[in-house]
Length: 117
Image (tube, rainbow, N blue to C red; front, side):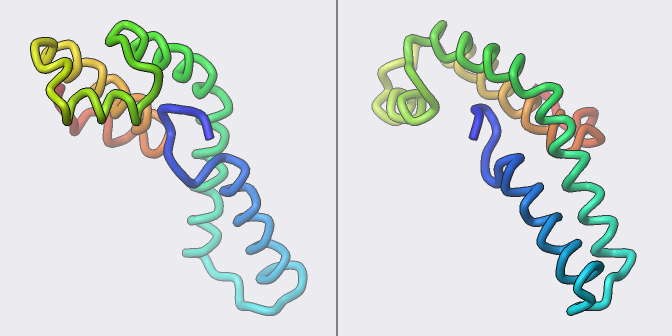
């Protein structure tokens, strides 16, 4: 899994779509329907966006963490909890919002205009 994205990974999404196609469509074990087909199409769109945007987002995420002096998201969370970077609240907030926007750009870009930093 590539930060800033959470589970499921692109590979897990593709695997789930493949399993659905095999069981519902190819093997005919389940009745394929429009809803499940729409879910599968949305999952593949997420994978496409993550493959396209993910590498640049990962680099930007790593740079944001480095600018805050932490190695990863867990270290950032620990620093926030301990108050170690309490004097940098505006920077932390900006970094977290940037990560949220990156996640939304992959998971559901339509929500981007609904969030405010």
